Amino acid sequence: SQQGEEDPQALSIQEGENATMNCSYKTSINNLQWYRQNSGRGLVHLILIRSNEREKHSGRLRVTLDTSKKSSSLLITASRAADTASYFCATVRVRNKLVFGAGTILRVKS
Amino acid sequence: EAQVTQNPRYLITVTGKKLTVTCSQNMNHEYMSWYRQDPGLGLRQIYYSMNVEVTDKGDVPEGYKVSRKEKRNFPLILESPSPNQTSLYFCASSFEGRDTQYFGPGTRLTVL
Image 1 (cartoon, rainbow over the protein chains, first blue to last red):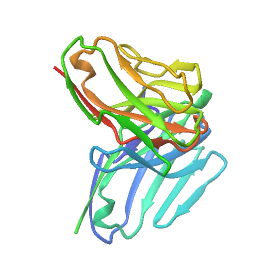
Image 2 (cartoon, rainbow over the protein chains, first blue to last red; image 1 turned 180 degrees about the vertical axis):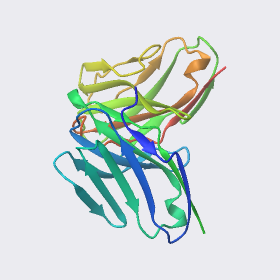
Image 3 (cartoon, helix red, strand yellow; image 1 turned 90 degrees about the vertical axis):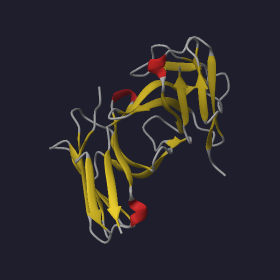
């Protein structure tokens, strides 16, 4: 079964706008990771946030984690056409098992 | 350059014809895994390996085999492929299972 559930399933915005994607999960986690996938290609790691962290930044990316609500969000600020991709959250369960959600498809229009 | 390589990148085969998809990493990672990606289902783990000679089933292991005889290689074997194994396959590696995963470029498999 899928652990992470991304929301929304698809998002379309104009270049320069911010994009927010959410991820919810059901069980306790060790960490939560976000990945990007350009059409049909391999996934690229974006950010890893540990269960004892609440917020993390990397360039134009900001990830938050709320373990009480079992949810995380990925914010991409000042989006660019090159940010068009699918974004996945992955949670690390017991025995270090990584489980991916179904992803959010982001389209940034120029 | 640190990377995970997969071969072949594209493969069209027929039902029942045994095939192997190779995966190799040059980062001395202990953890390696295989995923399949299908529309609307995200990535589902097939098998994983925590070290040489240590492998275990993921969420969808039926119809697949793996082996880990060397640290850098983790081949995926389909003994008798069926059309429901048509999918996009990814190999990934990391130092530990909970760490950042490094993905290969993918293998698009079609079973007729």
